[in-house]
Length: 123
Image (cartoon, rainbow, N blue to C red; front, side, top):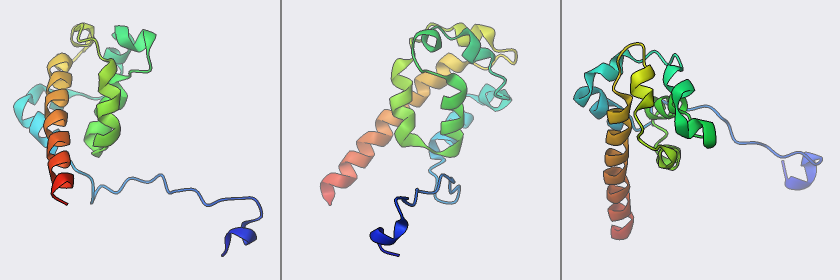
């Protein structure tokens, strides 16, 4: 079908996530280093206590979901709003050290981005 035959509509990109091609290495590394992260059930207690979430669009539950789905490109943009106040850790009913998880996410994402930059420089 040509663009003239679409009658004013356009075909949108699929919103499905391919877990076969997702990069889950960061999630596995965090789960290995911080075993309490396995206890997270995404209840939203951390999100409701988050100071940054009250003033920005930051959402810890969404960050957790992006990490577990392997959506690393959008994850690094989302983590910039965290203020590391620790309220999320205090509010977690399962005792997940979310502050350390977010700090480790930032460190590992920085390394991941540096590796991506090195790969593109070689091309």
